[in-house]
Length: 283
Figure: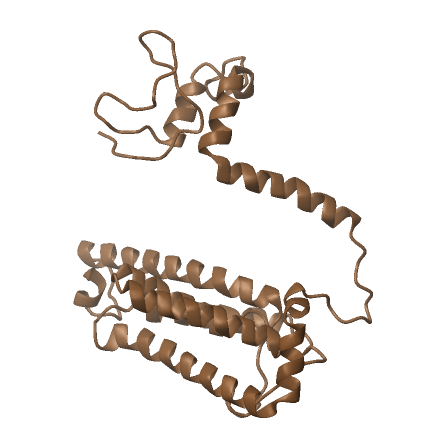
């Protein structure tokens, strides 16, 4: 018996009286969105019928979707809004500096740090300490706790970051404020796209939440926001680098979880071998 608890896309009718029910089956479960769509299209194009799905929609269905699935509705409006923005926006000329909303928002911080090199150095040193905290935690989870997921995720993330960062090498912003104590230490070159600082912090935070270390995860999230503001203020990253860094942390944490699951199944079936211990895979 299915135990899916997804929210249906549309209200479904009670098979006894044809009226809308509360979308709860007799066993107490809520039908999934996919199952409900299949039910609604039994006589439609999906099974060779002549009625398209949208022809069965009612005003009550529209109200239900707007009330229950308001988040996708907001994003649908966002699609329309940004289509208008994109198609009417004047492109940045080839010889001009890129426009960045984060740079505009942190213009005053950039001026403060430019006029106070000592403060810039202190903040850079603190940020390097935070990167060390991320790295220590991610490696600790594997070496000391026997849980390699965060470490695998970081390996996936930094490798893909290197490929993308080398493939498209963005220019340093003109107002960039470097520091010898900032990570990577020593004023060495680095990839702008995407932010490894932010992605690494996300990977650590997600692992903390899995282990119910909620206060530590919240601390990392706050420090991640602060480091993002600083990176924008020093022009060390564009806004898109930071946003993609958040997505990359979530994506590669998910992929590492799928990799662990796949390797665990292979090990249980006796196919192939694993470079990770049996205990670390099944934990």
